[in-house]
Image (cartoon, rainbow, N blue to C red):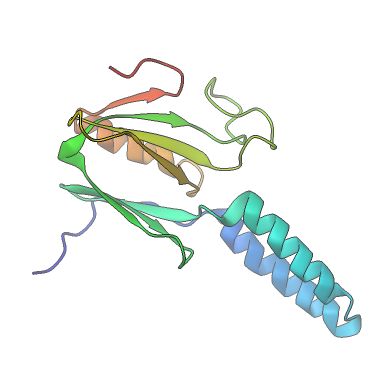
Length: 158
């Protein structure tokens, strides 16, 4: 049976595209001076940890919300929408206009979702994500149309 086509699918974050462009620039510089290869390794480690470790896309169809991490070593999540009671969220440092964001780069560079389930025997799940800017807002609008409660972190959910 064919999988249901997603109603909404977010795009990969810009940080992943920037990583490729910056790596290309450093590799071109390394042609003239091989010491740039050392900078490439150090930069990649720092940039990955700060901006790319939770790069993902989110796909939502009528029944499921799927979080597909773009790194092969991170396992993707598939959550049944009917089981969700609500979602708490905290946006990353870049969302300066919201009262619900991390204010400093040192806190975290990714968004956080805390998924609460209707079944009291299931524990809440923390999901760290990094999608294209404003992609998360589209996800929230769609989930709100499913009558799911979506609130900022540090506010009571139920």
